[in-house]
Image 1: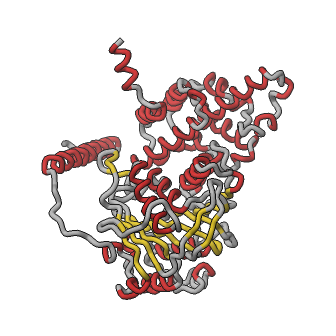
Image 2: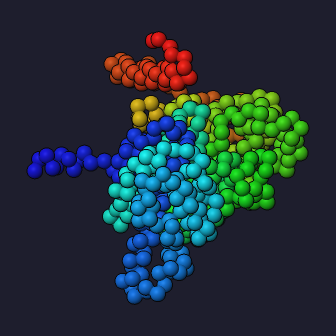
Image 3: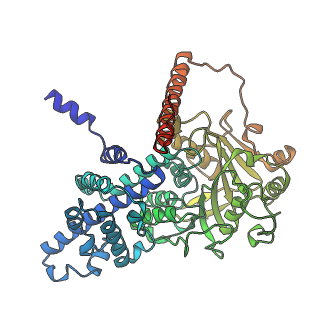
Length: 525
């Protein structure tokens, strides 16, 4: 009895079980490629599971005559699966040398039969990858043993999909993984600006996490999904497909433009005016335009043209241009944008004078998988005046925040994750959002007050006096105190990090030796 109890306690969640097993089968396929291999195959299994369940329900209801009629599936947000894409057919051929072609055909036929999946699934991907058929077969066997309809949880695939996206981003790490914004950060952004209805935009949408979390917010606050319209754009075609699949499996309709394209050079939503915008663009993007490009772009109207050396202020002005008269946007940027000089100084100065910066919130280091730098949330608002807004849960009243900017420093918050990363838990986010709302809303349950080392509401005159710097530490009071360091804890952490680095170095060294050996140039070690 005791053994059984312990075993149950140690049982991993389905998403972790799948990830651990799939990662062992990766072989020679790079993580950047393997995520498409795994996620598309999981999708194929999930779509089939839903299709089979719905088909059985139709038979129970005496609808056998309609089993091959697509509208009877699509009306219930179930993808219709043609015979060549059905799971029993795929598994029957799993050991065949042409299994890659059969998977490609299956995905193509599913996309053709289901308009909601247009442009979402890989196109002739498995054949082009030249992956060992035995590896594909093993992966199919693994996925075949997992029930993606566990316990009636209709979002189990969404959880698996998101978990795998997160793990792939962790694997790819610095310089890559930009397709994914950590869920804890996205949740905070949504809780800050509350995209409960209207048009939601993301000009650097990656795998669609901002949109998924926005819909979660709507669901959790008794909102109406039909009252939300999604518009986005993504540069990379494969990442755009991830986003479309990520949204389609949750029944979220979205306009991601006609194609994958550069947001600056080929804006897919030129005339859009959104209620909300959430963006995590590439940090400190250099050479984002040629010197003679976009110099008179309408998105910069009223502002100097952002410099070619850094796209940070290009992203800020792109967001502003997409907001309607009451629109609110959040943009994640590297901290250097808070005090940058030259044209960026002039743009920041004009943004402050135009009173469209609502809050500057600095995050802890190591929250992102692509960089270890500290990052800032810019909250932009086209209307900081007092007004009443109707909500599904009751009207709210904004107080007049004209001529004010709220500064928050969250660098003392967060909890360790995967040894070297930090994340916010629900309690952290509740504290942050409570402080933000107490400053923003009239008659809120908690009265706002400045708190040393946490937050400060600055008047425009103070900011002008500090030469339009938006660095929070220039406004928030910091108490001088000797840090109470736990020496053993810090050294243990350092020891763990060094162990990881040395292990990675040894692995890279071995891989290099193997490559040289296959080329006929053996290196004695």
